[in-house]
Length: 350
Image (cartoon, rainbow, N blue to C red; front, side):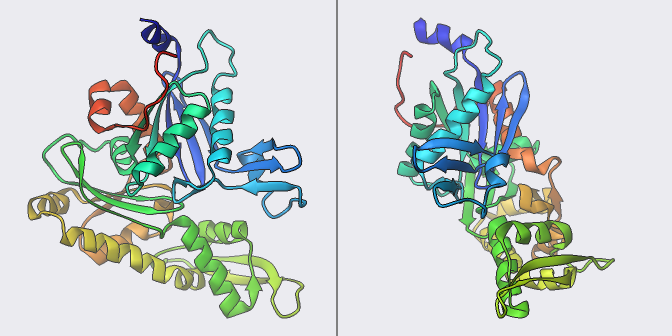
């Protein structure tokens, strides 16, 4: 009785714990946190100095005693202690209204497709250590498909390509389960690295990660554009060691991204080749749904459509598809029970 009484008082959270950003949905309130998955820690005393946007602004600008950490790589916990601090900070932000609710929330949290049992347990343990009373994990493509409005419970094939920051997850879903899938480490961060490498090779110019990302957002594309886009690119000249600024256009950035875009298309085709023909027929009818932040790259839907010969759509509010999916699952207990996996044997009766 006591656990069920507390269950009625605690808040219910849906969390998209992403490589680049963490989004938190609170049942009844909507998405109230959308912050970079970055933590700045003072190594002298172990105290958290900043989280989210404030910590991201410190990247590349800190003295030796301040460590700016991105604790998630490809959506998998790379630094358990920092991830715990990140989640604890967000849990406290959720409960800063000082309402009667007890800060021991029930949490639905998303994990990549290819996580091991140990990695999945690490997610549950981090959330539990940060204060969660109960943790359920859901595979990201499932949550993304639900958030995109796909009817995944039908005996009908749905193909979702979740283009995130750390990984691209390709999944064919039917009857609330993943039939065929693949996760590849080619996504937003890899595209940033492509731009950095291209700048070094072609212009002898060393860029920072944030500069590369801004170039990708401002003029990046996967297919030729009707109108040429140009912007300035600033970095350090590798020959003189001094700052230098040049002008680049969309064709140059597209050349930098070309190999990775082709790799994504090739992997989608590879999954289609091993998908049962009945489901492939369904996908040909319904098309491929793109979710995640990297799906906002200009023309990536056209590039995938040209490569596969299938219709491709970008989901509405694609950045928030995964966390919106957790919101739907919190409202639909039957569906949640069908798709969720217990993260760990967490503390009972609290």
